Length: 379
Image (cartoon, rainbow, N blue to C red; front, side, top):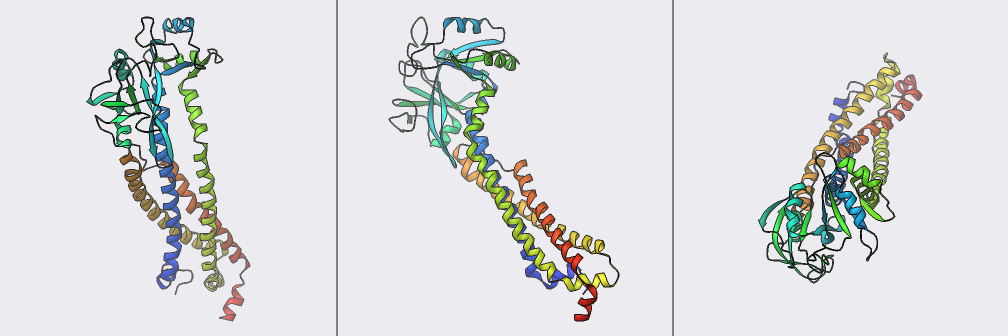
């Protein structure tokens, strides 16, 4: 046998080769799949709660009785960055995916404003029609419909599902298609009090649509308004609230870090034992003229190669498992799945990198302490 020959050593120690590769392989695939799962959950919730804020902002009054003043509304209508104000009331339809039980937006707006809303938010009618004013109807987003198993003619609302934030019972008359998971509800005396009055509905909440390419400027002006009187929902504020609400997901980073440390210690310890059992080979190399740097280099190449094989195989398995997870747990439930994730890739990469580091360091200690003459004499 050639001293410290990786090929010959693992040819005669197949179980040790498999153990070395599998430990990295399993760790990488687990970390990758975990982060891909979290990525799917995060993407779905982001689109559900934040995505529409890329197209418009919202203003609303505090309290149940206070209205937005006519002066504020007139000021916004005269603002050159504002294209249109649309009164609305926001409700929620139960929406659940693995890791989250939440609600999808159901906006009560007047029928005359729906087409404009759809144009600005890039929504289309995939099936059926839009809700009529004064009725108890809803046009539901196709992703929400898939999540709930709903079709045209079915009913939604608190009488049907106690988790729906929409009092009563509403018939599904249309299916909407669009990236943002938004549904439309009929404007009636329950969903939008005063919708049919000549002076307009009760002024409690409005969508503020910007002129073309003026959303950033509009949001800056809205953020500068008196927030003691109004609740301002711009992309910045909505995104900030969203990031705070999913803080629990950040625990995954802590759990993953602990898992990585545990796996690295386990794998590193295994490799250390393997090289300790091969100290005769290391001593022989030293005795025939190899210096310690050359021996360490040969050992490092072996460790890097084993970790590379384990990383590639683990990454392939992680991608396959993430695809299955994405299809079965998210896409089939009306959510967005993530298969390739840069964060999942980078976190998985820590496994071989740290394993290499924590393996080479103790190997270097072994090499430094070995006495080649004593090893040869003993053999």
